Length: 142
Image 1: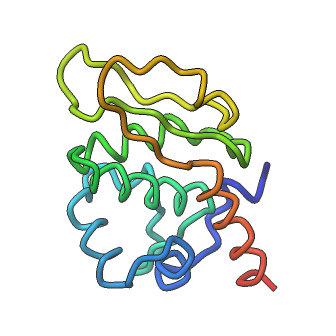
Image 2 (image 1 turned 180 degrees about the vertical axis):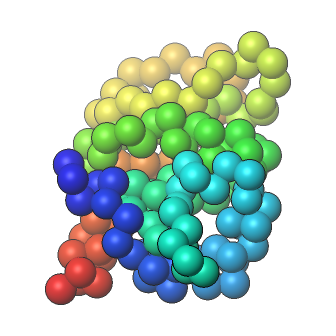
């Protein structure tokens, strides 16, 4: 999907699309400036974002709120958003990140009742979040 990785959104648009205040987005970018190439591109003095970048930031924001460090949250979100997920996809991650604890994975929403959880898990509705961002991006691009 070409529009998925095309960096055509300004920082203000990216903040609005991922549901963050512009100052929150600026703070998050500053905290991860060494890996900013994973979620934005700088042209001159301005930063540009793709829908994938915006989705990575939004999912990473949720993972950080659930206890991940900002860098591991970005890494997990980036790894799981190579392509847009199905709208019913869920990101399942161990509640406590320890060495050997396991990496987050996506499963379809319909499979949740059948899961046999042996430890606390974080469940992020990644498909619904990305679908919402895609819908809102259509209105911004118009």
